[in-house]
Length: 132
Length: 212
Image (tube, rainbow over all chains, first blue to last red; front, side, top):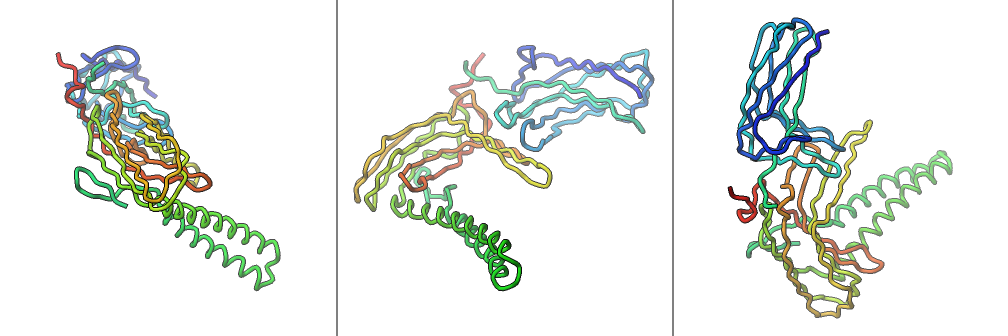
């Protein structure tokens, strides 16, 4: 079974740890670099802008935008790099509460035929600019 | 019961003893079938007692619903006015209540709360469970007193949706909602509760936006 090491870099935004902050309507740009330990046949290389709920309630997922950036063979010797850009929607804003949290992120998924898909996730915060 | 928003009337979300009353009646009639079977057949005393236990639970629900109706009878129908029910984050909301008490009633406490509610529904085995958590954002309280028949109670409050708060969100099995809850505590009776749902849209009041 192939293993992959993902490096998702988000450009711009504010702050660094644990997640960068972006504003609604802003453009989110970034790069995904993937290193595989062996050659992997890639049916689809998806980069998605998505949000989901976390906490006590049953999880709700919403895929806002999806890019299919590559189809073909991923080589073990050469890292595969892909750029992406998404315009962030106005809502829902990120939230962390008692029972419910709203988490935004960039999902990367390599659809491997007849194999386990390779996945990675980079969260970020979607929040409007407020007066301190 | 109705309320007014800028002169227009509408329906509010309120505590509904009628729902409980209906459910209690259904529960009692359904449980009574088992008691009837236990008494008319040779099912045995245990079967009858088990049925009676359910009838007793139904009667307790019925009693509570009737007491809630009695609270409403004692208090009457206050008139509520909300400046708006659709707000932005950072907006102010004006709320007023005016009431002429139809009967003499001793109220322990009158409380109005601005609440941000988290409601999560999840599956546990074959059961569907719902949990709620209320964040009380603002609470205003009036001291309790004895109101005589014909006495007028009138109050106005301003509430602020905090600039750093979250907007309303309703997705499958997860809800983040805003409510204004008016509650009058009457000793030995269920509280008189009226609740208004507010729709807080994902926008910031212009005065709260940082420029530059």
